[in-house]
Length: 160
Image (cartoon, rainbow, N blue to C red):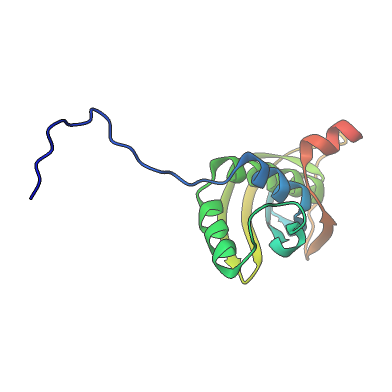
């Protein structure tokens, strides 16, 4: 067994994380499906953001194999920037669907990959706030659905 004559002062490690570009591509290309209902002064709903990674093939340098999509899904599940964006989208969608601002929204985020598709599921429950048109919210039952591409609240606000 060889003995080291000199020791390093630093431990080195390699860390793999989603790139900022990956997060932006996901945000810009995700399909959003939202549903919810207002009952007894509260909003209950969910938002699902989905992205088939194969749609990004011409935009990324990584080969989009099954291993890559699984790895992407695992990293996305712990990516704080992506989770923060997902929270903003879910709250924005819930406010749009309910027609009111929300107070103290409680969110549960689940990120997983299924084949080449990444899914971000966000369940939201919140107390209703002020009606966005200055009127109290009406009690609603049933399901409200919206399906649209790219839900980026800040970009939408800048465009409108």
